[in-house]
Picture 1 (cartoon, rainbow, N blue to C red):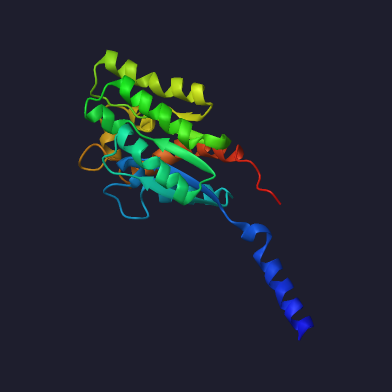
Picture 2: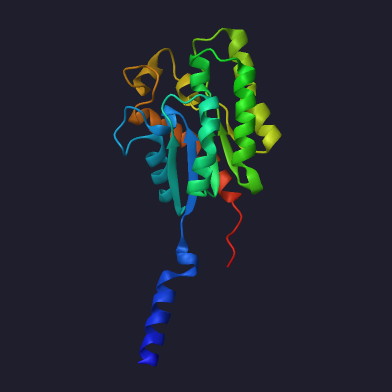
Length: 215
């Protein structure tokens, strides 16, 4: 009986593998653009990013930490509970669009994002900072907002996607509207795919910085 029990135990241990071969956990923390507002469950940024990464051989789980309507201040308030609950290996931070919409001062958003990155990157956790831009701001305000994300990325040593919607800005005329939902604010499923094609390699760079797990 003892021999049989030992054999069963060894088989189960081998099947489970080291640390049960848990996938890397990436927390995508942001607003409605991260959450996938207005899209079917499998068409938002998080599921499309997870599929893109898995197709490229990464054993990852991307956790949807998007909060519709969140400003940087709202994100800062809820970040701690998400980090405690999810214990991610790396974090993507995508916030600031709602600050622009609600006319928050750029300096306030930068201060909040600075605190978010400090908290999210505690212990050397790799980060990717994702910015956003609006085509409706004055040139001066556009420049002021655009400077925030590179400055923070350099300060915290994070990866950077300066403008989530950069692929749309590169499209001629108003053809970018074909990548948006009827609200002309949130990306549609095809628009998300275009975003992931641009953003994905930056996420891979972040994954490469995740320390190996102890044996």
